[in-house]
Length: 447
Image (cartoon, rainbow, N blue to C red):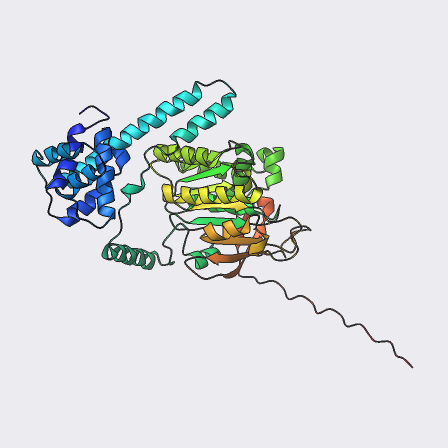
């Protein structure tokens, strides 16, 4: 065996199947390995033949394998028989298959690295070469075969464990809290692998709200969570200005014009201490023009540095670079990529989305840009609506959080108090004031 090729393991797996009389063992091994996991071309061809035999409903054994190889015109039937006769142990072929799988993944990683190196050494735009290289290495270490098919009892026990956790939490949360009780009542917390879409008209506060989600998770939660915030539109400095205002209870305009250094020193110190004390739980990625593959690679690298990620926020969907002949096709590719990232990183991903221009009134699913793809992929879709957002927001204002889709819970409406001068929202028990009845026009007397 060299570092990237274990010929003995390949021979052991094939030979062990030849005279194995346990169908469950055969099924396990066939589920673990693909032809591409074999480095030896002869072994690769034999494995392709074995999979065809199993796919036809026949048993995989010392009769069917050589017969199928002969019928296909291959001269490998005698070699396969030799592997079976000389197999050392049939009992260990499942473990051997797992070891072979790990070696194959190392080989695939080396191939991806070599391809990335080739991209870097090409002529042309350096930024494009770097992007292509990152796309090549984005999926290193991933393998769908690692995720075993679940036994119902194991899944049931997992669900009961989640129920016990929710019961002990006293607030019914089984996921990551948004920091807003009004929203948590609908969601029970943001769940791993969920794609959460927050959509609103421009300047309605969607970046502020999702930044509040991230701030709570990293800086305010009793148990801090590791958060990565992709800011594809605003710079990291602009995002930090909003965070300082929110956490320090300082007017955002005073942070921006510097007057807070004179008027609000104690409040700034409070925000500074909060951020410094939990700095390891929060990262900002403000590189613009990223593709989904780049974002996945950068998220994976951040996860390795932080020891995992608990929440990813993407501001916003339409700033992601994507291929596609039409806007609808591009949005479909982007949103599917975000859902895929949620599953790969095993954490909730919150994505901000625009609404169609010219929206009047409360938003609906049809108002989403690329609505069908987003509606299909999103596990939780939240619209923000405020009648005052284009006018003068004040203490009387309320922002309606419309839970338009909730795959694992109820839909409905709740309200938040906008305090956008401090770059934040707050929970509220207030309801909108009833609208006054329009005055009835007096009918003119005819006589």
